[in-house]
Amino acid sequence: MSNKTLCITEKLYEYMLSVSLREPEVLLELRRETGLDEQANMQIAPEQGQFMALLVRLLGAKKTLDIGVYTGYSSLCIGLALPQNGRVIACDLNRQWTDIAKRYWHKAGVADKIDLRLAPARQTLEELLANKTAAASFDFAFIDADKVNYDIYYEYCLQLVRPGGLIAVDNVLWDGAVADESVDDVDTEAIRALNSKIHADPRVELSLVPIADGLTLARKM
Ligand code: SAM
Ligand code: CA
Image (cartoon, rainbow, N blue to C red; front, side, top):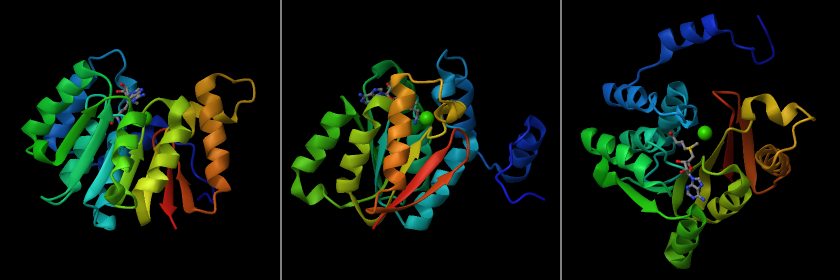
């Protein structure tokens, strides 16, 4: 027994998946196709996708944001968890990756729920906020795009999410680099700075969940 979060071994990880993962076939297929891409490690872990889907359901979310789409796994998890009138505003820059995403969203029957905005995420979030009715109207936001802009995305999300809504920030443990003082590249520094900021931020309640590469949950007060 341990009263600390376990350092999970490969064997225990396999066991955990064997007794908990319920990955729909379409998500498994997307993961297999993405696995052929050099950047496949950018994709969220399947147990994380399942966890986020559970959060979306618990929140009774309808309006959601996915910032950083890649080949569409996180958007698809959210889209599948939403009711028929739910929406994901999905932000990315890359047409090649998001063309793969769109294929799977269609295959899963959720394409109508996912509104892909191919533009810098900052621009999309600014455009959303320009419409006064969008402020404080989103239930859930997932931040998983370029790390140097994480703080900007967090601030926009705090404006877009309703009180009681949730912001999930991915890769907050950054493969352990955040705790290694010898690492000072811009991505690591950006994640470290946001981690410290959220820790002290009275605008949210938080929990850092050590699932996959670390996921901070920040509930807007
Ligand atoms: N959430 C995705 C999933 O479940 O597979 C993984 C997202 S991947 C880690 C990061 C994505 O952010 C890439 O697809 C990249 O094109 C996108 N990205 C990078 N900079 C961006 C920016 N300034 N605006 C929008 N998207 C950006
Ligand atoms: Ca990620």
